Amino acid sequence: MNLDLRSVPKQHTAAPGTDAPKHTPGQERVLLVKVKNVYGNATVYPANENAEFFAAIAGTKTLSTVVLAYARRLGFDIKQVEAYNLAGVEA
Image 1 (cartoon, rainbow, N blue to C red):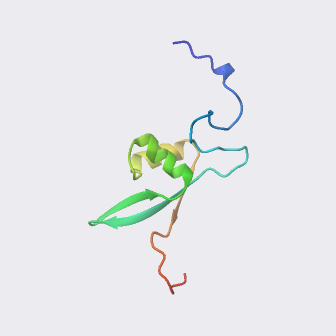
Image 2: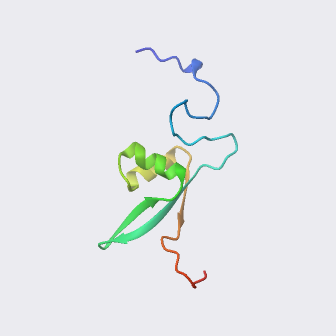
């Protein structure tokens, strides 16, 4: 198979028919994650479309430390959001 990288389009959009996140130049590349305690283990769940995309690539519903490390190498920032929103409790 001969892959000519010069013919790759410069657009930052997904191919038609895919549900990949669409990135525009200058858009923040952030993975939002929720960390939950599951049977004594910290489990990382995706909290935005970019994070869900990486979990789909990995074939899992959660994000492993290896997947997060690869995402960081690709230029994504990883930010943790609160796992639970309790009514009447303000941060």
